[in-house]
Image 1 (cartoon, rainbow, N blue to C red):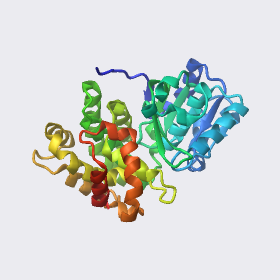
Image 2 (tube, rainbow, N blue to C red):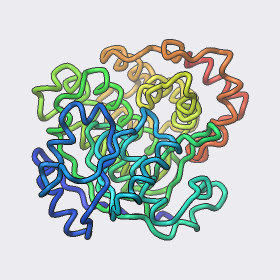
Image 3 (spheres, rainbow, N blue to C red):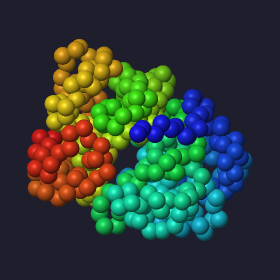
Image 4 (spheres, helix red, strand yellow):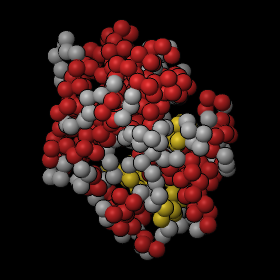
Length: 376
C-alpha cells in the first residue's frame, strides 16, 4: 500500500533565506549548530545566511564536512552540538553537509551508535526522536533538504543509508541565489544527480503515482535547464531556479526508492582512495543501467522520452551519454580512477545497498560485475 506524504515546509525562490529567522522561531530553535563545509564558508555563503538572523555570526559552526559525509565527522559535529548546548541544526551546503547535519540531529534525538539505525536490520523502529533540522541547499542535486534519508560512510568502510520519515527536515529554504556562483563542473555533476534521482524514482516498481508525477516534472525541468545552468550559471537565473526545483522534486520522488545506479555509486563512493563525487558517479553509471533495465521498463521509458522531449524511438542511454559529454562530465568510470581490479570489492557493497532493493531489475553479483565493467 503506498504511503503518500510530503512533510517539509519549503520556502522556494530567490531571496528565500530571509525566512531562516521566522522558521527558527516557528520550530523553537534558539541555538542551532550550523553544519557546512569549508568551501561554502570560504565562498561567503555562510556569512550571508548567518546575517539573516539576529546575532547569527555568534552561533556555533561545524565546517568540517568532508566531500562524502563520514561517521567520524558526524560524531565530531555531534560533540560540538552537545558542548554548545544546541537545540537544532541548520544545514548549509550540498548533500554532504545536509546528510551529516541530519545525522547529528538523529543521534542527538535518539542516541548512538549510528549503525543501529540500519533499516535492513530493523533499525527504523529505534528512531524515536530527531532534533529539528532546517536545510539550506547551495547546490542543485541531492534534494536532501526534503528527503527521508541520509547516507554516511561508516567506520567499517560501508556506506550506510538510513531512511525514516522522522529524518525529513522540518523546513527547507531553497534560494537559487546561493547557487549562482557554483562552478560549471559542479553544476553539471549535481544537476545530473538530480536528473538521475528523477529517472530512478520513476523506474522503481513501487506504486506511488503522485511521487512518480513529481519525478517526471523534475526531469522535464532539469533536462531542459542543465546546459544553460552549466554554460551561464552566473547570469541565467531561470536555469538556476529550474535546476533547484528539479533537485527538490527528485528527492520528493525518490520516496518511491532508487535503483542500481545508486547502489553501484554508493559502493564506489565509500572508497576513500577514490574520493569520487556522488553526482558524477550517477551520471556516468546511468547509461549502463538504463540499458540493463530496458527489457522491463518499456512503458516507463516511453514516458521518460516524452518528459525529456526526445523522439519516440530515441535511445535513452545514448541521450544521457551525449548530454554528459556536452556538459563536461567523464565518459566512464575509468576516468574517475575506478579500475577493473576494484570490481570484486565493489559488488558485495552494491548488493547490500538499500537502493538495490528498489531496482526494477535487480542485478545478481555477476550482473553487477558486468555493469561495472561496461561502465568503465
